[in-house]
Length: 357
Image (cartoon, rainbow, N blue to C red; front, side, top):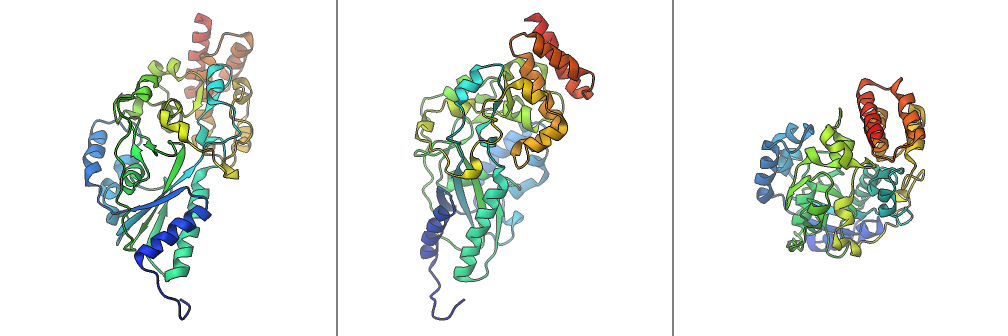
């Protein structure tokens, strides 16, 4: 550290962190301690009831998710940040959902993959801290480790966990990403976790196409369209296929209906703007992509993580839910001859559905 420079107090450093975080594109930064005792029981109960489905990684790391010092030794505080992502240039979600010949992709995935962008920004934030105080202990996370990010964000004061189990901010809605820095710095704790402001509203519960929100603040991932179209590796259960509609990557219904999102601010991040016009794409065009075309058109996107096979699976279901047309039937029949057994099952379901429509 340069001579004659006074080391800031923890309170002063926190104020600098808030300023630096805004300069780096984060909308808010808060700090919490590591005690997640109030959330541990809920999480373990969720696992015990198998509501995590095939997401085995939720079990894998044991108590690391709610014992921060087991994940990063010496952790005293967790810095939690949020970054808006709703792209201002995208077609209306309602328009895309209303036209069953179009595909609906969750709004968070229309731009570049947020993981790398946010990790780089958080790393820049830690670099600023190092320049200010010297070496310190830390580790950066963006949906990349056994971290209970929503409980941490709620405890820090970034918002409250709504009845749909997403985080809601009273001034910014829910269209934002979360990131964390585990650190050994004794920063002041924000200590103003907001109470729930969902009140008697249950719009998210009522609108869920597959009734995945089985009770207020209770989500069964096995029924959730985001889980079914993104996380689930094999066949999608027949009972949910019709309800999926034209949602081919994720689902936003519970956020689209939330009254708090009238306060949401569209992102100003260029990397989160819509790419390859996927905000309201024609299903047949997407279905006709070869695997190389899929990889090229989803380069740098979170969509690529599901792979070509799941992509084809999801679109086959959406085409089966579209109005009957000779063009759709021909496209499904042509793909049936070259599809994997798993995708073929969904194509056959789509054909049977169309024939009966």
